Image (cartoon, rainbow, N blue to C red; front, side):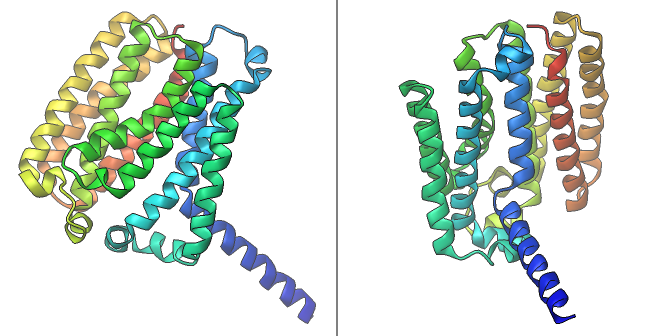
Length: 297
């Protein structure tokens, strides 16, 4: 009987440890980045067949390099955002704090080292690319995340870099791909600004120069509205450029979605509304990743 209880306790402890690391590494974000990279290789940048891509070890080395360096990035972000996360994400911080600082430091060094070693197996250029990515993540966490507008632009850039790595590998970048990349970038920028509206209290606690704190909520909404109009116009251009029926359906859906977003942004002023908008944009981005299969090469 006691043996059974001990086994259950041991299982619960293992589960708790796994949950802590899943929170620390934001595993759901990493999963979607991996899917975006693989789908980009398969349906966007490469002219190779599915099985030819599966047999290309370099693609998997690039993807895993991204994974390890992003995981390390979340660790250093955890170090420098503790005070802000205590206000904005108290539950997540409570779970992550169960992992000691020394363990996080060892993991940070180990994960970055693995990421760089894997990238070096592709080429020296790939090694330099991911060394730059690693350094930019560290610089963002330490300093750039506190600078007005720079924090938003760099955070968006950090999301796009792993996909850009696949584009550079295949050396394929046409007008349609550029428009899709531009659309994703502006959507991510809108998401970043809405997130700033949600996290104002946390930003105040660490003296972060966010757009809502410096220019106020109204001017931030004006910027988001202008960017949303840019999204809609880019979307219309893409609809006229592509031929894929299902891709057009997705792009057509974006137009009423972002019109509703603008209306909601101006008529609802509570944090809950901003939180819902932020998560709906996440859903739109995920759907965009899945609809990569319909992009014409």
